[in-house]
Length: 344
Image (cartoon, rainbow, N blue to C red; front, top):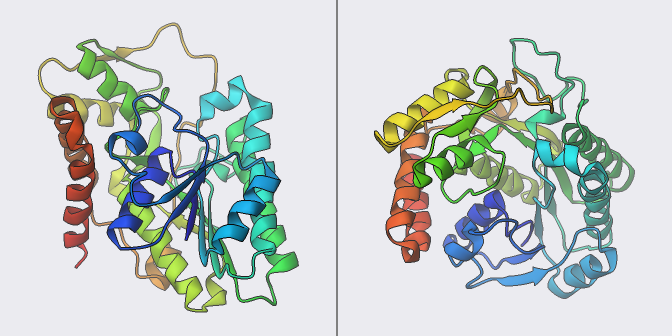
């Protein structure tokens, strides 16, 4: 199978999990976006074929697919940050929209592919700031470049599915997760990494919008959904092609301040946060929830790791890494095994 974006946070966790399952994995991605990063710290490169490439490079994508003939494709490569979208809207659209078009075009030309999972975002919805959760058939939108690019990705994938895959045994699905958190994330301008980075430095973390409400979830939860959906598509259930939400239970949809306070408690007395000033000039959605009834009903997928547990595991992972950098791969493996044991 082939994973685009395997050097990113979610892509590295997915690749590590696929390796643990015994899968033959080819990764296609730019170099890891941060230093440090999970891909290198946890030696995810070991045991896979890692190709350095840009999804905007159609010829290189074609050559990679032709050499590997993958049966399953997980497309995670993207510009994945809201605030980076404001700083580089052209790069955000070219990567998230044209990059996805390139991936879909190569899939169309690769007969071996039987299932493709295109990862978008919970932010692809036209957010009316309402209190009830969004379903897969709600209106797409986006009032910042990142969110808009993900809505465009949904529309592009739907057009390719309808135009080119109705008579071919290849299921194409898009997946929309919540705010995914876990060990090994060092991205800038993302709440949990920003908090942990500040805690490790012994300085108060700066919080932009403590009242903003998000659907927080442990990284392996949506990945388990992606894997289950890919397997169902490979098994030939073409009716499952389409859009899917993989979000947390309602009680784990919490404001930013709640997350910050819990992480302070878990980290210890040297941890603290304070409100960022002056007010931020780059607006983001205030309230966002996902309805995952479709996944629960049709795939039997249901999140099992509660938010409190997820935050404990994250602190455990980062403290373990700080104390022994060389144990990063073991920490990943141990948490995957612990997670799997919950679902047996």
